[in-house]
Image (cartoon, rainbow, N blue to C red):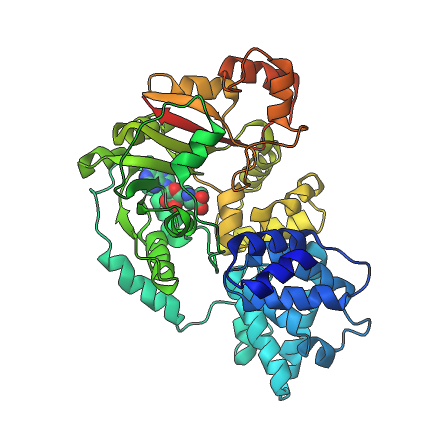
Length: 479
Ligand SMILES: C[S@@+](CC[C@H](N)C(=O)[O-])C[C@H]1O[C@@H](n2cnc3c(N)ncnc32)[C@H](O)[C@@H]1O
């Protein structure tokens, strides 16, 4: 921690040091408040290249251990770390949520009788948190209006960023009208709830992605694409978080983000302007219609998307058809094993007839968090439990397929793509899993395959060892 901090003092924009420090702050826990840690957390919140999602875990823990025994409103209103956390990190801690609900009620009461400027600032920070979690916390009908209402529900006047997104949405070019019926209902879902609603673009070290993938998968075919910018396709670009990370960190690249949802793309467009990322364009349309673009791409990344299509194989083929030979495709798909709990949740939701509305989501959370639906309680450990769009995506999706390695084999068959291997720690500097994870397990078990890429072997390993895959992240190459 001290070494990374020192590196940042010497070079405030060093991405590697920022990432290293944030990874430590994410895990930092102390039994009592720790001043040094709080200072580092506040510095992270002052740096808009920091990863506020990661830092939020450390901050939440410091806030909990430092919470005043008498719940003093004045003490909490003067807690800078609490204010920064509420404005910038989505809370993902059930214990802290309970405390914050009590605090919100106390602030609402104080506002009704004329609060101090500090308490008003705390109310504004709680309203920001409500905006971040998309009003997923329980409402309170007794708080009918006035300044307190913004902590409970969406303001009647749209926020400036929403107005801006509506304007940007109208400007986004379309590939073709969406005709597939599943795509239409998926589009409607993400028009109402762009996913995810992200707040910051963490600084990343520059990367030559093809060179990095050739290092990770030395058995890939080396193809020289020359020095022109790498044309990167991001199908299912969503709200642009992943595409903007790619556009701002991949060396010499231009990015094309395609998505069904104009509202999602408009969010991405606004964020691109805010972060000064110019090498990106957004197009609205169905992955199935990619061939209609009449363009080819050198690289593609598509995470969390194809399992939401009626026919994921058709989606894969459409992407493959616009890739140049030798292009890499990075994919992320749901795993059957990893989502057992979500499958149970989806069944319970259906049986109880809970709608995918804000009220339905709140009721679902109430049942899970109070223990009424005890077996689903472990869902609170999932990152996507904590805001309306995240939770809707996690448990209320209109269309979801789940894969196994065996299904992956059929999925890739005939797609014109060659499977290169799984990624277990995307974003880390190496593909290694430090000798203990699935790659090491495979290497020890199948000594005659140094490429770690035989899907028949992986299928066998998956049968032998449950819980091997947290979902499937993998890389293919266009033949
Ligand atoms: C779970 S979100 C993932 C967004 C983004 N890839 C990410 O990882 O944050 C799924 C996205 O895929 C888009 N999507 C689903 N089916 C699609 C299709 N057939 N064509 C284009 N986009 C699609 C949705 O509109 C949604 O924005």
